[in-house]
Length: 469
Ligand code: GUN
Ligand code: FE
Image (cartoon, rainbow, N blue to C red; front, side, top):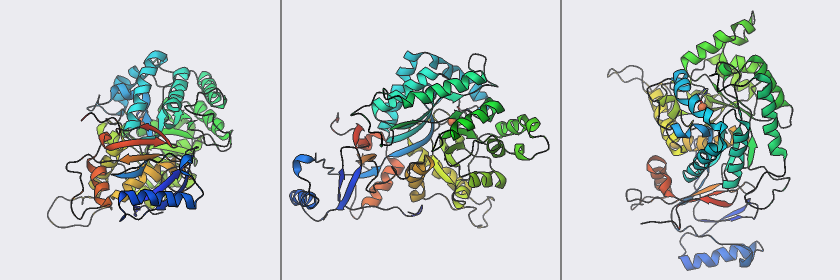
């Protein structure tokens, strides 16, 4: 597997079992006419000892099958704000736009209405796995997890923790923040969590998992940060953690200033990453959103601890946070995935994150002088294969799900999109093949091009059969 190589398979038959697991992928002869193809599929099945009455055959006559897209950082309760606040930067935006909306999620009816729409919309956009921040509210966060299960989206869901520097109406006491996080975790241990299909077998990967979610260092006391780290380490494998890091210059300055007292003569509080490492929050299960303003020392801390980065390019532009240097992280073998960061970013889908990530990487690559003397590019921009990797396998690795999702290897769960570009510009022209149709979709496509979206073998969204003309 290489970040630089995109593998296409020609016409194939793929068998998904009743549990949603890919059993095999068998190439077919693409020169055969349709009727002959059908015979060949039956022959391939017979070779494997499978009879027609055991399977439901789904023919995808046009377009191609693509692994489901993975959103490694987004805020479900910020959906009502999508597109608001583009002239603000992080700290003002939080105070004026974000906190006043999030506080409303104490109301379960309101939460249900918003959360259902978020999940449906992101499934329609091809997001088969999503890492969600919720709010501080335990009950509506449980509801978000239940709705993901009900609507069939693979997800990590986090009850947000924040016990300082927040509005009086939207904050928690340290002890109750921990207690309600523990209660939230217990919700996932109950066999009564509703499932969308048959009861879950104990051995199977849960569709929806909890993730610990200290909002960011500014809104968490040292005692809250270390309690959450201990909670994470109390299980094997550790409970995953998501947080924000090094997003905005004023935020970074505030963090190092805030922790100066705790640091004393030691060095750890000099950097944002050092603060998180000190409190035990960095490890292979940690997703760090943004990481725009990193120096070598912080990159080394991320690399050493095995934490990974959710790159949120749309948000980093929208809130004027800065241009994250993703090539430098990839060169250090740091795990990177893409995030929409709704509503820091103004769009729901990962296609738009792919495009923004490309544009930022190109901006980072431009020579620094604007005169006409040619100078070498500063860094290599992210290529289409690089970007597609971040949206699929990179995201899977960041979530520690690289053995289960991200591509179509047998044994993985079938999370997939049937991409049927609707043209007219996207129809194949003479001499164009799968590579061209793929590129046209990545750079110019949208939700309307998704004929079907499957998560773990179950169809959960898509336009096929719903054509309105
Ligand atoms: N840092 C702390 N909270 C937030 C948030 O809600 N969005 C973004 N983008 N950054 C944050
Ligand atoms: Fe965020």
